[in-house]
Amino acid sequence: MGGKNVKITDFFSLLGGLALFLYGMQMMSNGLEAAAGNKMKQILEKLTANRFLGVLVGAGITAVIQSSSATTVMVVGFVNSGMMTLKQAVWIIMGANIGTTITGQLIALDVGQLAPLFAFCGVALIVFVKKQKVHHYGLIVAGLGILFIGMEMMSGAMMPLRESEAFVSLMTKFSNPVLGILAGAVFTAVIQSSSASVGILQALAGSGLIGLSNAVYVLFGQNIGTCITAILAAIGTSRNAKRTTVIHLMFNLIGTTIFTIVCITTPLTSLVESLTPDNVASQIANMHTLFNIVTTLLLLPFGNYLAKAAVRILPEKQDEQADVMHMEFIRPMETKRDTQIGLSAIAVTGIKKELHRMIDMAKENVEASFQAVKAGTTENLETVQEREEYIDYLNKEISKYISKVLVNESNPRDSQYISALFKVCGNVERIGDHAMNICGYTKLIEKQGISFSQEVRVEIDAMKEVCIKALEFLNEIHHNQQDNNQDVKAIEKLEQQIDDMTDDYRQKQLVRMQKGTCSEEGCIIYSEMLTDFERIGDHILNIGQEMGLGKVGA
Image (tube, rainbow, N blue to C red; front, top):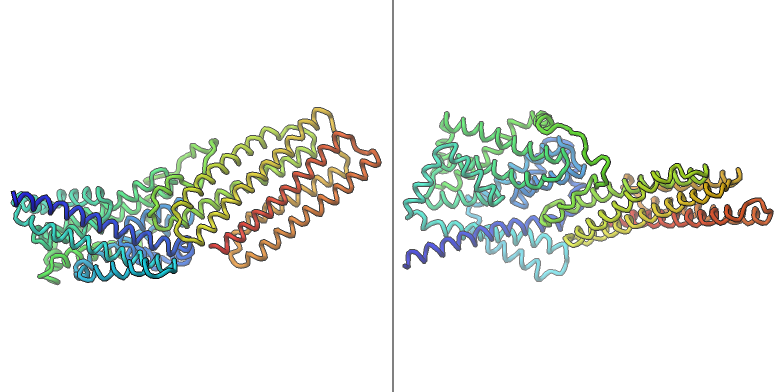
């Protein structure tokens, strides 16, 4: 009965150790996201232009959070939002595969002895230091400690398995390359962490249950299994984002094929064993590092060809949503993965691009509405109505998305930025409403046969031009990263111009009324239109001020 009891508690220890390992990784990922947040975009923009720097960035981020899956999921999000090209993604993915080997090396060096100290230091930073930024770094340090405490628990839980003949027999079957690769791929796909599955393999080896000659094929399979997380993350993304996961999968399949053949036909395994003959965990870590570094070096010159191959595998197809209301740059499912690194950068980029779509639609409606009033026909009314419905749809969907992002946002400055974009969204929608009002006047104009004088028609053209100029300027603001104060001042100047024009045109209208040169109905419509014109100016100013605040927050 005692033996059976030990086995059950060992199994519980194994599960508890795995839980701590995965939770430690999640803490590190959260810490990095909270510390870097929207800055991640700026870091990547500067460093991914060069393939070698791109590889180093991928390796560095993955080394910090101990998860190539999380880095690859981040890259999928960046490619989906248009922040990164497919070619840039190739280098980050290659680097991520190198960075993930750090965990195995740390386990082999027995850093686990210092794990409680790391956990204590991290928690002390969170509990005793009031500064929010220090808390983010505390999460990373505490996560590292908890990760290795979990690793130690798993190692201890596996020691009694040496006495199980059935388990030892199962381990020897992995000397078959196909079985080993399948076992590694499936297990890693289930727990969605190659770092954790490699750590478990090292724990098995450290307990004397498996040698490098058997473990090597399981190790190669683990590299393939880690792709499942990115594949799941790519569901519902753009074509290019899906191609990113294809590149990740191709990288590991090519590496596995090469190394399996090399291990079968050459004494590579024996050579790696001879480097650290008394430390099987170190042998596995070294083989894992060798696999990813050599595969990266071999494929580095062919990165662009990998991107082209991914395009061949997933060619462009006709956009089925072209005539359907949809968001082009935002994936609503993204917010469900609240531990995803780079989420702030992905969210902000997607929101800004959708807002620029909205501003473009509002601008088209403003232009079409003033033209319709000047022409005195309802010809444009249906088109403007449809576009206004699309603007309303985008306002609702973007607002829902922003509210979900804000719930998960841990960086105060990014929260301020995203809140500013929320206000921008509402103001753009109101501009659309006023454009719709202006276009709606054409029904009465056409019905009653109202016609405006040449003087009024010139004024309508002038109103249209200043509105279009201001809306175009709004869509250029985000390109100027330097002087947001100048941007806001320019918008304030345009809004003041709209106010001055409104006052001037009202005075001129009074003169026309006194002279009796305009009809009663025409005067009412023109007065209402001037009110809408002035309100458009107010909302443009609100947007400019919020965008200026946003850039300060960023």
